[in-house]
Image (tube, rainbow, N blue to C red; front, side, top):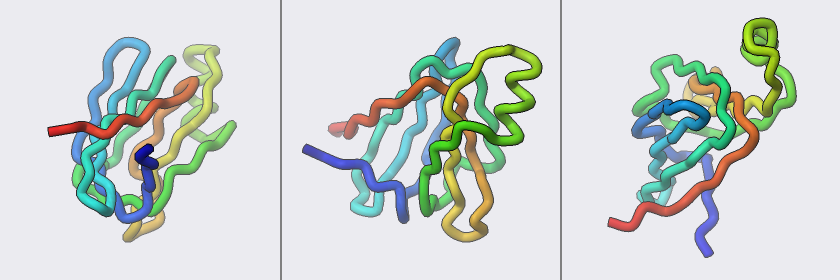
Length: 105
């Protein structure tokens, strides 16, 4: 079974659709992953495509989730992708959960 490791991986694309966000990710072994965030209510990307990642944090509350809660009233987990170079959050997705699958080419 393949296990996704976020450290030293790169976000290659982000696509939002109603109720879900898909992140295309390349891990440190050059395997391509498709990460589907289910029950997504919002996401915020700050130059995330092409960014090398050090970690994915799962937080119950962030400034962004507070802002979304004021507008939407829904709650979810904040999934925060952290830049390996600046330690800044470059992508936050508020969703119920996620599933990651290796893309076979």
